[in-house]
Figure 1 (cartoon, rainbow, N blue to C red):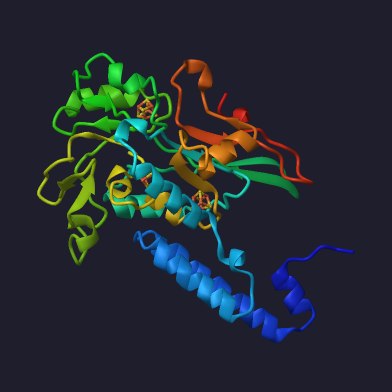
Figure 2: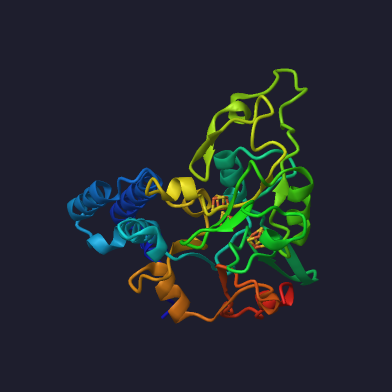
Length: 315
Ligand code: SF4
Ligand code: SF4
Ligand code: SF4
């Protein structure tokens, strides 16, 4: 017999009552996933379980990967920083190319036009009607041996490696020519120089508050509106360090519509990222350069489709 999802089954059998139950739990789960970003997972989880019980459904139906990662994050934050080992795992099979991660990252970090910490290259193969598209979300790989940090012209201490694995930029040191040199040295094209531009400058209503607001990076407060830092400095993804320190997952993780992005502590065997790394074939891009990136890609085929390894584009 053909397998069908619970939602389809409910629809196909016209079991409207069951479908409404599923919809209610789905809505509760979606709300939960959104609110998890605010660091309230435990009471919310209890509430979701209560909703599930009231609806006569098994509580594990409302579990999702965001809640799991939120708990992983809380556990990691109880350890000293040098015992945390942050990594990101991306499953390109689940990525739908929606660019939500790109937008949420821009909003979170107030980045100017032309600067995209998080890109989602879309690669098309084949000829009509047999076309396959793959999406390869990418950001700074937080390399363990970062070429950007040792590029000629980059001053000592401008780009440093934190004990938890994040590559940190000192905006007061990585400026002008030094920032350009670091950007050129990055083999992943992940580092940009803030040119001080705005999306809404010279528009009829002038600069909009979303571009002039205060924001945090590396736990420091910034505001670009008067040409202050980080204007003129080198900038890149930092795994949303300021959010991690407030027990919140990175913005691109919480807003991923495809559920394709995972984040956590690789040194914790209970974490979801450890489970994914142990249970799947994974690759890191441009490994041959010896950069030791901290972003992993699940490189497994989708049933019924030709497998296009990530290494096609990222040897
Ligand atoms: S990906 Fe580029 S910017 Fe990020 S640490 Fe590696 S070399 Fe530096
Ligand atoms: S981790 Fe944060 S800074 Fe990095 S790509 Fe995601 S949203 Fe942007
Ligand atoms: S939000 Fe998720 S699904 Fe959408 S493009 Fe980004 S990684 Fe892919």
